[in-house]
Image (cartoon, rainbow, N blue to C red; front, side):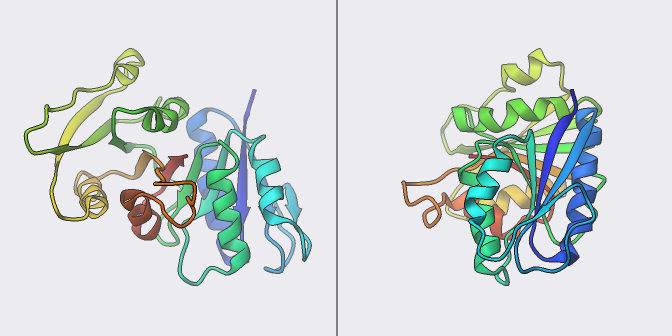
Length: 232
């Protein structure tokens, strides 16, 4: 059965970029069927299978309904120029669908990721929730780069059983946690190691999750320059 990949698109200029990322995601998963959900008041109707929401539509409800039925959601990384509708759609995709979300940066290639994949590793259920559905994307991956933050004096982590059991080639890279922003360290190390994609869990500090995202998640949402597969 083919994967269903939902592209949630705001500005028309981003649609082909996001569609290219969705096609690549489908290629990695074996077989993917791409649907387009275009947000209202952003230009002409999409030429991909899908729909454009009308003015006044409940954007969050539409994203939740269609996203919850998809295997993956593809959406642009938020930018300061995003309008209210685009921000609402992103929040709904991340927090209300329970699906893996591929966040695509506005610049750079969107159809070559999946060769060297970084994982922001933290031994907890939220990271596993993001990693497990991504395993089916790693069949042709040359190497998974496990980036694990460790505080001074703490035991060094080991490669998680889920990657060992699936035979995924993995190397462990320990990142020292100190007073500097860990999100910046994480993205910098991923870049140094030649990663073309990052997998991570999304963390929030309270029920006011749209406002109080964890520091690392907030930094990645603002600054990631490679596709990021997130799951809240």
